[in-house]
Image 1: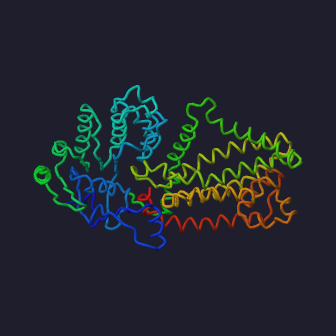
Image 2 (image 1 turned 45 degrees about the vertical axis):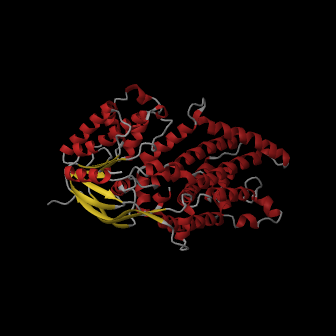
Image 3 (image 1 turned 30 degrees about the horizontal axis):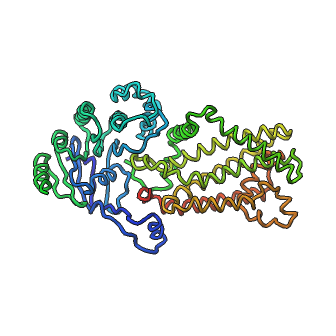
Length: 241
Length: 265
């Protein structure tokens, strides 16, 4: 088989629990700070065209895993190899300049994702059209609703035609119309042989978008296999109260 | 794809992303003055008002010649404001950008350069007020401006080093900017900004600026602008060794803190 697009092994992530001063003390060699293990030495690889859904409880390590794949959280231990351009779509509460307009925020996000100024200008009409935000794009984003932030961020993130799309619970606040549209765009990207890693609590969405599911619990992989089968067992195991 | 935690390589990569930090910095300034009528120009106006008022009052108070004293004070104050902000304002460079740091895989140094650029623009605007004031009092020379350029460059490097230290330490030790801020308030009075160095030396207070690195940083810019002469080797040596010392300090501190910094934000 060809080289995997994502290849990780033994990845462990510990979040420092103490306040920042505790970490400073540790750096000075005083004391070992308390830690919360978020990922416990997990490993897997993903190949071209795979659409991976990550399922698990709140706090199972899903978001942490995505941030490790994006190269944003350095793991305390383990090896991470990711080949190709990555478009991360994470939280939507932060990372906007509230006083600036939608257009200016698209421009900033485009630049942050590695586009050149010219590329941003070139793609602006397409991004604007996909977001369907119209007139609102000329308004400061402090006037936006949470769904509008998602439209803006998703339209920008997917416009770079990434090799790997990492999405964390993106559709919580999107409306029906945009969710369908976004799903369609994601399928188009997948048809070009791109990789998707996607977390959600919406099993219908997982089933319709993913062909492989990784089930996490307490930072460990419970199961990793074909979407239908894993989702079924996950639902059975987690549904009893 | 890039992994985080390689301090020197990331700093250079961040520097090359000038389009990103340039755009962000300019928008930061625009945002700060958003919905105000004068906008950007407030930096100029407020500094000019301050300089005119305080300069004339102090000149009267200390019975100094306004002609030499007002330009001296304004330049000193403009440069000091820049130095002090390079610690205090930069302390939030990474914290304010944490939304980006946690979402996008870019060298975090990009956001330090972002903060430095908006401070540098502010400095450029206050320096242009200084030029006008020196011009009005009749001592601005082309030589002086040219001789000041290497000094300004060195000052920018020093300020960027301050920004790195401050931006990296503050996420771990949130008291840092407050502590440094209060220290700087004291240092302000033992740095020849209000009182010329010769006056302090004459009163037997020479030692308080001889060992003060900020005195040298000020002087490499202030002397050429005021007197049109190149500062002596002694001044350059003081400023230069401070920058070398700070570079080593930044390299040690930031390299250690770099990798796990995102966990502290």
